[in-house]
Amino acid sequence: QSLDAFNWCLSWVGTAPIGQLAKIFETEFFPRWLQVLFQWLTSKPDYDEVTRWYLNWKKLFPAQLESQQSIKNLFNRALDMMNNVVTGVQNVGAPLPPSADNLKYLKIAEEKDKSQAAARLLARDDRAKVNIADAMYDSTVSFREALENLAEDNALLMLPKAGKQENGKQVYSFGKVSIYLDNRIVYAYDGGKWKPVALDDLLEKAKRK
Image (cartoon, rainbow, N blue to C red; front, side, top):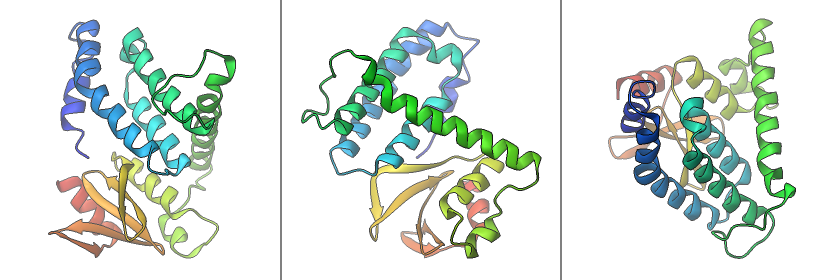
């Protein structure tokens, strides 16, 4: 998925009136974003993938923009939809009754995300960060997490594409390249076909597009 328009809008934070920027995101970004989430939640999703998708998007918003009440409300609406699925509410779009438990899903997810981030920072300090080559052969290492670290190290985003699968595998955007993982092999969509791709070539494609 291309983030060019999204990043262009974010580049105005601190320059344009923050209320006007929030209005743009409220009317142009979130309706489509919530629709993608709705379609994903109603198609037997992998809840870990949904959580990561939500948190990764939320992290892209600067605090100055995220603190706007309209933006908070829209992220909370997404959280309500996620909570409804977890608690078995039939109507995904219906908000739950207000309660302290309504935020449980996000709190658990965010704590998990913070713990993982802290662990990655410690690993870097100790020069013990997961190596992509080790992940190819070590069954205890998550190959997906190693790829996410590789993307992060190269100023790229690796995010799941909602509702997109190939050969029964989740499709991700790696930068602007669509990929999926199968038996620790990366397949990239190139020239209208899915092809195995070496990591160096993948990075080159992701940076070039």
